[in-house]
Image 1 (cartoon, one colour):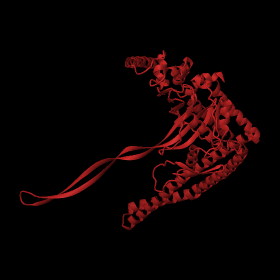
Image 2 (spheres, one colour; image 1 turned 45 degrees about the vertical axis):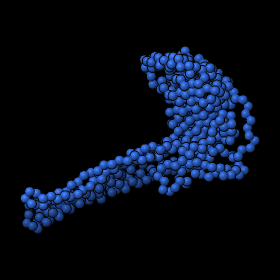
Image 3 (cartoon, rainbow, N blue to C red; image 1 turned 120 degrees about the vertical axis):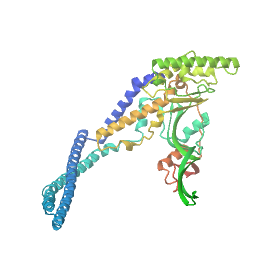
Image 4 (cartoon, rainbow, N blue to C red; image 1 turned 30 degrees about the vertical axis):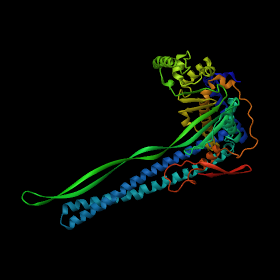
Length: 505
């Protein structure tokens, strides 16, 4: 076992953070050699392409300004003719002074505008438009050339690149190509992990693997809930009334009033939910829960006040439970850990202390207070042998490792996208696992041998089937009149060799 992983935050900041980046760049170098890409030639082509684009934009802007001037002069010419027509009208009517002034002025404005358009602007517009088209055509050729230069390089990216980089960086961590039936059988048969049969949830992304043989699964679901929505409306009504005054005259009055109403009705709501499920036999009877404390946002004085106040509450709780005689809950002797990690609902003090040794407490506190990762934005729920991590940062984790995201006509852009994505992906995965890695016993506890089934009723898990149909998209499956999102569920119809036939609901 890699001892540095016994202190995961230190491992990330001092080794893995830089190592994943170095491996990403080395992988890029290997792709350059395999593809035969001439990097400098591509850079020159891209530079020329951008110069042509800049020139094209420059001439387009000049032509646009000149077209604007032409429109202005056309308006002036029209106004000049109108002015001349008014002058003629006044002369006919006998207003010789005004007419004599307006007629020539209008003709001069109209004629001058037309002369400027014909002799100056038209030729300049044609010339600038032609220059823009010339540079645009050259830019298109250079862009096609750049794409062709990058084609052999782009074709070497694979969806397994991220998996391979992570496994090379942290050898104890293994990532599956897909969440297969053996992995599901292990989680289900050994740890009691269930199927995704909730009709209000549909699996849209998956990532599975193991740490020293202990399995984990990252699942992202589209979740449907029903919420109450208040709908409001208004209606303006009108009516008339008649009355007779004291003199016997009848009068009619018109009235209006705006009526307001509201009604509460159920409305479907949809959200994405990501969780990590981890199976481990250590402390097999222990149950507890931890909620995010966001200790990373506290300064020294705020932290001190929270610990001091929380410690008093814990001592009070301990006295109450001892007095009631219904619990064996006792403090850990580390007020900072007791308060920030909480887990006051734990059901087994012996196993809790077995799990959270002084090193585990130190690791957990470092993780929760550090900004090198995401701080304490995670919930940690242990239900015997199943551990569930739900973090706020997981909502920002792009789980799709498709190679198509890296393709570019520019070498430097492709490299930046590849390195940035894989660094970010690794950071998300590592800090999703970090609460578990902070517990040394989890790393030291290797699972007992599991006897797998020799035959499975299907080739692919129901989770993978839902992922597949969600990648296809909801449109082919839902009713044409559907206005909301749709939860897609699958049922196995038959297993035919290496193929599963499923029905989508």
